Length: 234
Ligand code: SAM
Image (tube, rainbow, N blue to C red):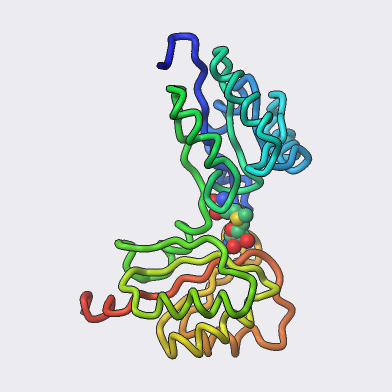
């Protein structure tokens, strides 16, 4: 059971591109923590430098040695406060942290979320499609057959569908969506909160027309409208 001496594991969201999206509370928690568990200490180091935060970092991935998770858990059990961050956005959302949070809860350690940016939620709310219910799938499978199998399984889904995608696979994925979903409404949200932010609205085919022949850079979220959604809302 949790004791009075147990520290807190803070799950701290950080910007997805625009440093002004760093909340005051995230800064306070990172300043006050005994330890920051991060994916890449060079990346997080730059964020900390910008906000003049000098807390010690420890690198952490889901695939890091189990000893790393144990070390963080024992720091927490010893009363230390640990802040978990990822390279960008909300930890655990297509980012490391799930086993650590699960194990901390199992051991009775207090866990607190410090909310902030998340690319999936930002793309969902600017899609113009129903936000409830929605399903988030993280990254689509990189292998062609598996990706098409996934998409085929989802073609009758009533929920709004949210995916992360790499710029290198975008054209292939859009072609798959065009083949499987036809002219279903969708958006491609690229570089959100950054200088070259763009949201392409229409069908997969119109998105293909937009991107074909261009060098596709940056970070991308795809949102597809669920089937019957239009009917329900008209
Ligand atoms: N934990 C992060 C979050 O809360 O959004 C996501 C981490 S995941 C490793 C990175 C992926 O999120 C990118 O490949 C892209 O699909 C999406 N993403 C992150 N930042 C983005 C942005 N500014 N614009 C569009 N997509 C973004």
